[in-house]
Amino acid sequence: MESAVRKLFERYERFFNRSLGGDMDTDEIASLYASDFIAASPAGVMTGKNDDRLKQVMAQGYAHYRAIGTKEMRIRQIRLSEIDELHCVAHVAWTATYARKDQPDTAIDFDVHYLVQTLDGGPKVFGWVSGDEQALLRKHGIV
Image (cartoon, rainbow, N blue to C red; front, top):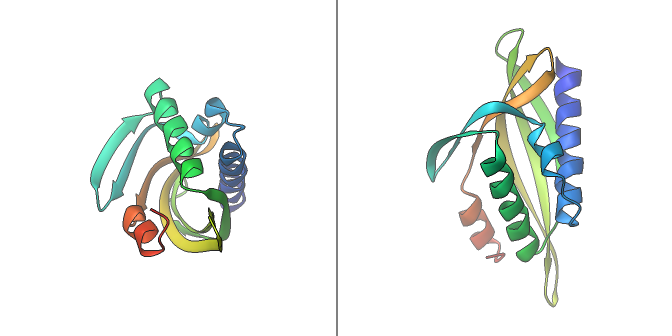
């Protein structure tokens, strides 16, 4: 399971960076997710479906990331906590790099904890838990 989950997040990183560059394929990105998912952050808990609405929200999200100067997202580390033979939590440490006018680029480290299920079609993200992204961006003067 570990190798397959690592490959899933390597794909995620590639798709994310291509999308930041304007080469976005929402079908490819949606292929990383299960048919339904749950997300938790300080903003609350939400559920969703992997459908056209998700693709629309992703397109808006990447447009926002480009607008605030996000240049790149890189994985620093992946640590897995196995739940059973089909499920794990992937603790992914990311570094986001932001372009700043008249200032050096700003790199921000953060972690997201992804719930992953591995079935016949391979691993898929069915949930995630993240910190307060907006507070972190404000702290670093990005927004």
